[in-house]
Amino acid sequence: EVQLVESGGGLAQPGGSLRLSCAASGFTFSSYGMNWVRQAPGTGLEWVSYISGNGNTIYYADSVKGRFTISRDNAENSLYLQMNSLRDEDTALYYCARDRFSGYGSPRLRDYWGQGTLVTVSS
Amino acid sequence: EIVLTQSPGTLSLSPGERATLSCRASQTISNNYLAWYQRKPGQAPRLLIYGASSRATGIPDRFSGSGSGTDFTLTITRLEPEDFAVYYCQHYGSSLTLTFGGGTKVEIK
Image (cartoon, rainbow over all chains, first blue to last red; front, side):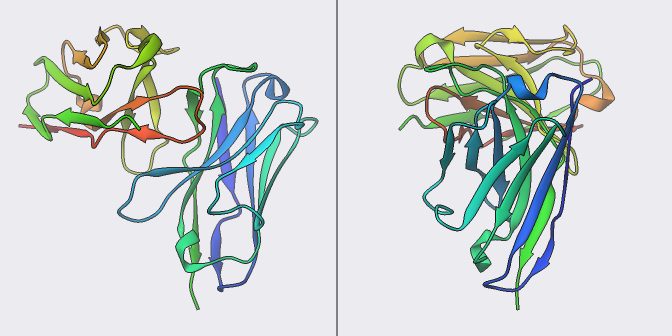
């Protein structure tokens, strides 16, 4: 059974940092691209960042570029999101999500999601 | 940018009844890249249908998807107690960003 379990959320001050983790199990982790997606209170889901299975291809949403860093450890079946220079607007429930398909030009279908970890940025 | 409009906003039904949810796109969705998700509070989003009509792994056959072009439907043939939730359609393609409809809440009548 595919499982994704996020951790690392909590309260941070504006300008502070947090590191989110996503522990994956039930599939060959290195074969799949992974994403971080967030949902702020009262809003829809917003894609944050993507990393390919081998870690060589990385993308960020403009809203987090230069502040967040995505990474993965395939030996540990883990995905990470280092969040620096946090802003109030980064307050959200953060999900990790697996890409169903891989390869150049493949459609971006996220088939498995974790339950999310809550990040609150407030002074 | 494709806009997805779901209807109705809320569906009040009893267990055992049939639920029919609609999703209309503002322009043709190529390759039928249309998915349906179920969302419950405190739980991970659950992929039900992709490619407009393909059931995801482990999804019961009471869930079915149909449609093409701009009009798509999710049908739940016999509602089980665990099916009362909010359902979203989503267009997926080569873009990394997410495009969801506004959702249909299926509630117990």
